[in-house]
Amino acid sequence: MKIGALEAGGTKMVCAIGDEDGSILKREVFPTQTPDITMPLLIDFFMDEGIDALGIGCFGPIDPNKCSATYGYITSTPKLPWKNYNIVKTFSEALNIPIGFDTDVNAAALGEAAWGALKDCEVGIYITIGTGIGVGVCINGNPLHGLIHPEAGHILIRKMANDNYKGKCPYHSDCFEGLASGPAIEDRWGKKAYDLKDVPEVWDLEADYIAQALVNYILCYSPNRIVLGGGVMHQDQLFALIREKVTEYLGGYVRSDAIIKHIDEYIVPTGLGEDSGIKGSIRLGYMAYHNLI
Amino acid sequence: MKIGALEAGGTKMVCAIGDEDGSILKREVFPTQTPDITMPLLIDFFMDEGIDALGIGCFGPIDPNKCSATYGYITSTPKLPWKNYNIVKTFSEALNIPIGFDTDVNAAALGEAAWGALKDCEVGIYITIGTGIGVGVCINGNPLHGLIHPEAGHILIRKMANDNYKGKCPYHSDCFEGLASGPAIEDRWGKKAYDLKDVPEVWDLEADYIAQALVNYILCYSPNRIVLGGGVMHQDQLFALIREKVTEYLGGYVRSDAIIKHIDEYIVPTGLGEDSGIKGSIRLGYMAYHNLI
Ligand SMILES: Nc1ncnc2c1ncn2[C@@H]1O[C@H](COP(=O)(O)OP(=O)(O)O)[C@@H](O)[C@H]1O
Ligand SMILES: Nc1ncnc2c1ncn2[C@@H]1O[C@H](COP(=O)(O)OP(=O)(O)O)[C@@H](O)[C@H]1O
Ligand SMILES: [Zn+2]
Ligand SMILES: [Zn+2]
Image 1: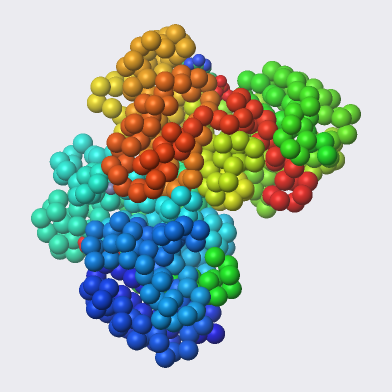
Image 2 (image 1 turned 135 degrees about the vertical axis):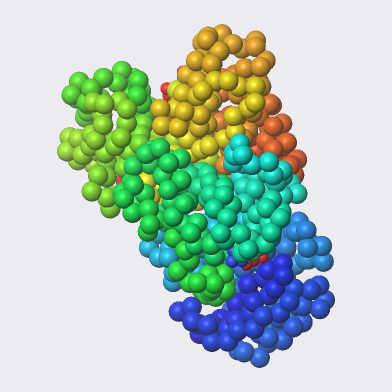
């Protein structure tokens, strides 16, 4: 079986051809311009590959609800040319195959659940900390939708007393994303994040915000494991700091050995390297083909 | 079909006999003393009723995971005689019928989903604000477990600048439950909560904390509807205040008509009055009988 996969991002579009085991046979990257310019290039990539289905893990917000009038749309994104764009319809008309469509982070969670660090997890969550912060949720192999889809990167957390930065979220200023995304770090400290590697205060504060959010996710989702990805997590000293602070904030409340004794295996990096999103998109295509979503 | 139901609380045990439509045929309440004293009374109640299954919605934390060595236990509760007590085993040996076992709030969410305000919700959440604060989550008719079960009453929220109360949670002091449970209100203001009806500051502050938590739940769970129950919600002026503050905190971020246009039908009181928990326990019994959990 051949499956097309698109990881649609605000700056680049990653296209791949894969199979039902999540192997990637071919891959190409296109810059994200307008739909008029970019969509034909993507369609060209998939057109003559003989794929049986396509999976799309997409920047958002999107509408992944098949019963909705705006199913398949990228909805209120700040990337204006893509706002209210029906990306599923365009692919569907061009390729005429089953299409799976979800958020980039739900796709990443599905990919990690199928082949990566969230295997065998009843509830698995994938968090990206990069240009934005997003949370994907996979429950018994299925993505969480509900009303629309989780937007848990924007939860309210507590600003630390020693942090005078106002926050970068255009909607909430100092929500989790507003305080802890890559651009928030760079704005607060006036330097590129990767040039701040040797400034411990930066990562201590960052780990605190990430830990607060993780504590809220642990209490809300009761996940069996948590995967942290995205550009900011390249600072891998963060993991130890985050694990320590999560334990502190939880105050012994969630009495599971997974957290109390094995937190190193509970809060982990991606199992699929940089490929959680694109492999998750393969999984979405597979699920669409087999009517699993 | 006759189904036994137990809503097991820290102060009282509500027993009922019901049917598969959630009708209650008989009900009796026992004070919660020690297992030695209380369990025989409960077993007596159910013994000769010819019930086909029993559902238990239980105070916690509990272990609802059938594959776990401590399945059926009340685990780390501060009610010491019940700590590490295997309540499922005792009933199972006495009654020899299928037993459904979950948290009181997951049961309430299931009850509301089957017969109340969460009907037709892909994701429905039930929040009780009483002696403690608990959140039950029902996704496609099933309770959410994962690692253990949600403990979302204990999420971190922001203390308001004008609130000097230190918080009442023994684990986290000023988590949501620590700031907003009934006992926290009474401790902060030095009066019984129902005697504070006419003090607007009390409910303005309370609504703010509840709204902060709801915003985080909306962003995490993406629920199709939210039910608020528990003793504190008898102050029904809270609903309008909460809805207004949720809208404010969300800052227009979740662009769904359900929230933007119809918030009165989005954040609602229980559909089953005071019976969400006991009817949800009937539902648990039904699900156990039919191997649905
Ligand atoms: N090595 C690094 N250390 C710290 N931060 C980084 C590093 N590399 C990238 N970032 C941050 O991550 C952001 C990009 O995140 P990334 O996950 O790669 O992309 P996106 O979120 O746009 O998909 C950048 O804005 C930068 O702030
Ligand atoms: N009418 C009321 N107004 C405000 N608060 C109330 C009212 N009735 C009860 N409460 C509060 O709710 C708490 C009891 O919550 P309830 O949901 O009835 O029980 P529990 O949580 O123990 O199951 C009390 O501690 C009290 O603080
Ligand atoms: Zn935000
Ligand atoms: Zn707490």
